[in-house]
Amino acid sequence: MQELTDRDLEPVDEKLPVKKRKIRKDRIVPTEAERIEVKRLAGLLLTSEQIGPLFRGGMSGRWVRLNFHTELEWGSALIQEELHKIAIERAKVDGVFLMFLLKCKCGWCDHQQPEPTQGMIDVLKAISSRLPE
Image 1: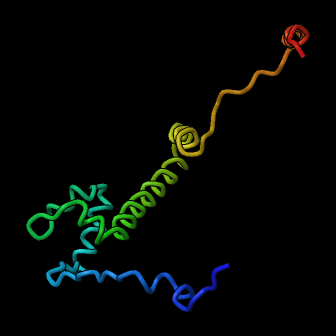
Image 2: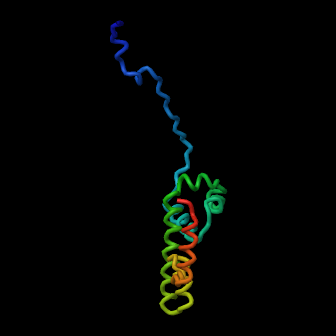
């Protein structure tokens, strides 16, 4: 059997070269005013592709998503919260809107399952007796 040397016991990671990432000095850092504006625009249901051209002479939607991902999420969440508040207030007053809200948002269904009659039970027994076991 072959003996292990000190070189064999060295960690493998030390043998691999480490690549250093270059940091761009001309990187554009968003300002606080831009963050507030993106949150407001996202609240108006604009996408990142629609928001991008409004900043600094036209930025890509990818740039907006990378730099303002939190603001995009917050903006859409705030508008959804406001819409839900309005829907609940309207449902308290209007019965038709309450039915709409229950069906669309709460998964409510106004179709009831019919209760089985004696005829239905007889048919089910006849069918089940013919099925192979």
